Length: 514
Image 1 (cartoon, rainbow, N blue to C red):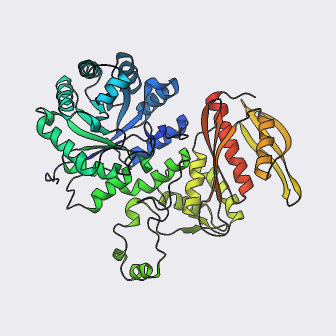
Image 2 (cartoon, rainbow, N blue to C red):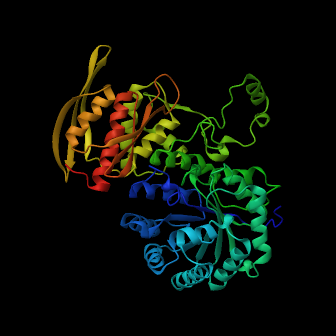
Image 3 (cartoon, one colour):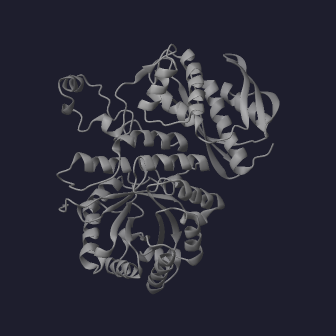
């Protein structure tokens, strides 16, 4: 159990690196920057901005985040070799607080089968990598990949050696989510007790969620001396994902007697950050997800409602306001003016340029004409769409869809193509198995970009019979997956907007034809 009340647990967010490794969760540069800005607003201690060696795009993204984001440490991941480490440094060196994070596997399974090396070779590579990283940067983190399945004595010897070489943080990952809390807590305690120079470095953990124990293992590590937690927003990441930042920090906040530690996270920014990441990646948060799910603070049972009316503490162990969940959903309608709309934007925590606010107000008025009430979730979605940074090469000008029983679904679509301020009107018609399929085929004809539709989801953004429909699509083009999002009170229009959003990403990110 934690004893030192002066200790601080620092949060290392890897949403932009490990989180983006979720299948189909890739983001544009502007979307990554938007997430990084929100992570900084939430006061995350360290942002792992990416894996610079992996691609030119990732390198530029990490570099730009290092140049533009102030406050958090900006970290880049690299393997234990010269090229990776040098490339990483060239990307992050623009930050006022740069960190090089180098790693190599230490389990015999990985050493023999994946790396095809000996323990001594891996030991030497780890030490040399840290020494090289230290020559560039004072803040160096070393990760022993697959640590939870490594021989503990060998693991301790490498940890001691890399600290001696200059590592200021040593990360003990449960890379494949294999551990259980008592076992993982014991591993952290063993390292703390047996590594002679452990007081010269921060013990970190990075727990995956393959057995659904990522958060539990992370908290067990805190109990046994870990003071850095590596995690992601909404728990996204490889396979079953990572430990969720929001669940860990709220467990610490809710149980202060059990976890008497400090933390720097501004918890009121959690919900907003969760929504942003979900919308930009297309990875929908399950309704019953702890802390940020739409049902996390919902009460339907009569017994629960009776208790809540008498005292909210009967069925709520935390306040929804603590994580930034709006208490009042109904806010604006078609008769609302600029002043009321701008005030609500401010109340929701947005600080936007006047021209962006005017553009949002125009979109709000169009939406308010379509539905009786505009909710906070509607406004959040409008903001996220407006600042997503995806250039609108193709925009919708006209849609006519015919469908019904005994009728062949047909769609006529007219798009405006804008390239270097030159506009071109393009129109096509197509038939399909349904109105949405027909519309998508017509768009394929116009753009010349034929994609494979991998996933299509539709959900209501907010409450009421006239709620906006939000459509998320995942399409594959030339081996890469792109996410598109669209919203409207008309689900066919929302479907078309989502498809066009994905196509515009392809044009910009891939250089799609036509």
